[in-house]
Amino acid sequence: NFHAGSKTTVSNIIMSIAVMLTLLFLIPLFRYTPLVVLASIIINAMLGLIKYQEVYYMWKVDKFDFLICMASFFGVIFSSVETGLVVAVALSLVRIILVASRPKTSVLGNLPDTSSYRSIAHYSYAQFIDGVLILHIEGPICFASANYLRERIMRWIYEEEDKIESSGSPSLQHVILDMG
Image 1 (tube, rainbow, N blue to C red):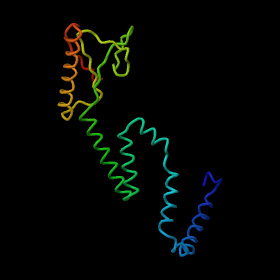
Image 2 (cartoon, one colour):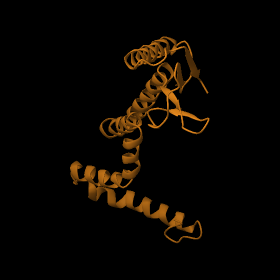
Image 3 (cartoon, rainbow, N blue to C red):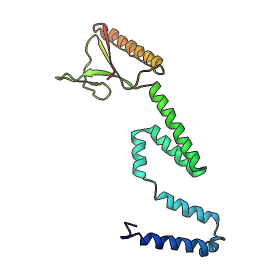
């Protein structure tokens, strides 16, 4: 109503009367309209509700969120709103469990001429410190993630020891866990 230029609630009264008259007198005219035409009208109206740029951005940023979005969308389209909602909530719970049980880990390195330590994967110029392996854990530590973290940390240690053996650098003496 605001975008149409309405200033008072009289427009709501007129609109409700128009809808009531349409439902009373014009609905019988639509009795013979095929369901396919009605479905195409509904789909056409629905397509205007989808924000394509936001869905594309979701695809670029987080594939699992995109999967949840598409699963709920198709659940609503092909079944019902309740089904789409149940699918979205179930997949969101699966995501929470996955994040809690498998937190991200990364190796940190010192940025030259600073006292900052950043991920080696994101900062290629970050430098290793001889004999020290610094690991950053980006999630909660709980019983669900304990085995995964132990295995992941041991894998980082074994990989670092293999690199040290092949390069002839000083042996690995310390492992620092950054859990901030």
